[in-house]
Image (cartoon, rainbow, N blue to C red; front, side, top):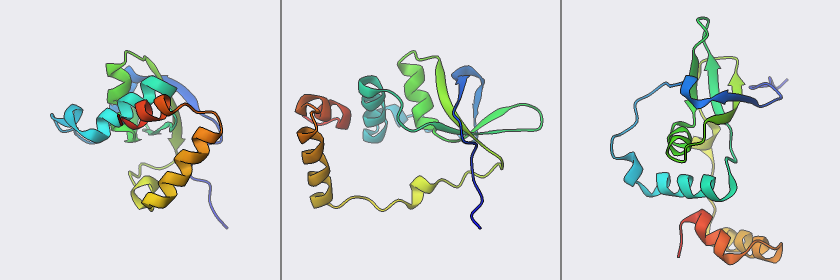
Length: 129
């Protein structure tokens, strides 16, 4: 039987109470990944919630989403939707995701355009010209 990893509902927390579980590099804001996250959140909002663990002392530790939290701070967004983990495990399924091939990415973008998403919005979200 598969055990559920997170609660069924998002919880909205002020980002000021969310504590990092690891340090963030000082130059992270100049990375392409950070710029993409920042642009994506600015254009369409936070898609993937922050994964947190609440300690026995009531601390809200970030398990996954450190860059998203930094982007929210830079955008002056004060609250974030979070999923609460029952265990303090920093394993993230995102680390095990198979990335899209160029052909799959092209098909995905084509479907988005056919569905009514503007090319300008796609470029802005993906950080492309």
